[in-house]
Image 1: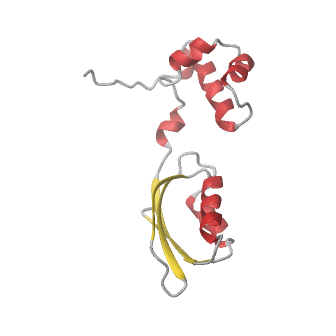
Image 2: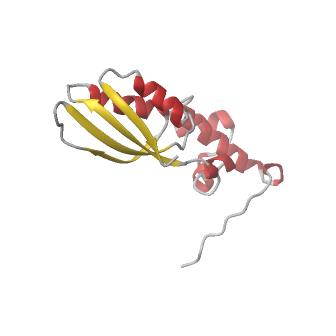
Length: 145
């Protein structure tokens, strides 16, 4: 099997189609448009050009994003705390890599959650600040950062 080769190239020397593919991906990722058809029409490239290059082209910042860290969260074991915690994490843009929750002991449960902050919407510190506002979370610690 042939090993993949990657290059870092200044965007202004590349054919315009590559920048347009990235523009389509940004429109879709941001939620500004919800279909490939609408995005390619807006950027003015063909769908076939988008599909041909979509997996081969990405902005440099996407390759450097994605530090991994873990949170240890102690929550009260009443209904709604766990789902509210997961909702705050999902809104932060972090991707859940691994999640473990132990059984409740004396009304408290511990969650160990490993996250990748790929989209960089919220930093780990901002995420912890938002999580502290969730009713029922007792303690939060950041590991691996």
